[in-house]
Length: 396
Picture (cartoon, helix red, strand yellow):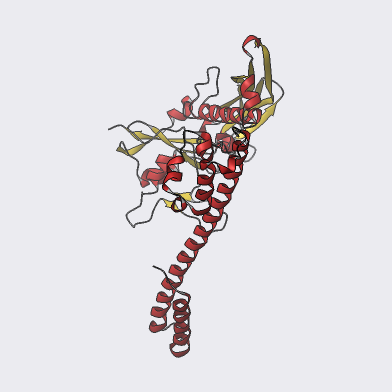
């Protein structure tokens, strides 16, 4: 719907008169206000369309101008028999196309233009490489962001853990107290090598439209982040990190949902009571599970998922924050799709200092092939299983 400036002016004046006559909160004023709002919205949309069309025309004109200049240069290089290229039918046709569009072409000129011959119009349709490389999204489980991370100069890190405290007892007057002491354990974390080799030709390195080395470095960093995130969740611990979903002690203490093949809001609230007071747990699950949990509500109609009313505070599920870890399983019968844990205390990641890059230009020298091999050493491991509460979906 197109709205003229006079209509906008009349609508605003009507609103002002209504305010003066009936007041700001009157029914008459509110009705007129809604009408004015619709009028202004329609006017804004119409105005935005006009501006967009104007900018599009300007952009199209500049692009055509740049193309015709390049075309003139090509034709100048291909002059035949001393004739001026501007006297040719092709040039006149393209010149009229640029100035007046297809309506400005004569029948003979229109037939002359063709895309399969460069000097007959094909140069106006040459391809162009975009200067921005579009990349598919890689979903990375952010275990590193919520866990304890230690940087070491050695391959192996030992972590001492106090498992129990001394037992204090009450005694009568002059009674002898019992002897007791804390009990300690030790967790050993060994860093494993995460590696990838990228081969490429010297031709690609020299002729690529992009900074190939920068793209390789960025892709390798993303590959390392994806690989370690996946193993921090699902790793077996054999020459790779131990995933928190694989740790035997975490699995042994799992809770089971009350419904086969599904979880309920009651399951989530029950899970929040599985950890000791003093831990600071968060929920973790994948995006599909989050979408499902957002639909859960109790008998009073209150949803498990709640947006925070405090600025800069996260949304919560059953009163606790959450993170999305895409490597966790979907909700299904017998799946471990939800975990409630204090990752900062319960899971430790060790990074051995530095990352190694080896450039090999000799192995493939006859074929002008260069290989870049990247190495990085790290691992992850559950160090306090009691900081995890796992929810397993009941089998159907």
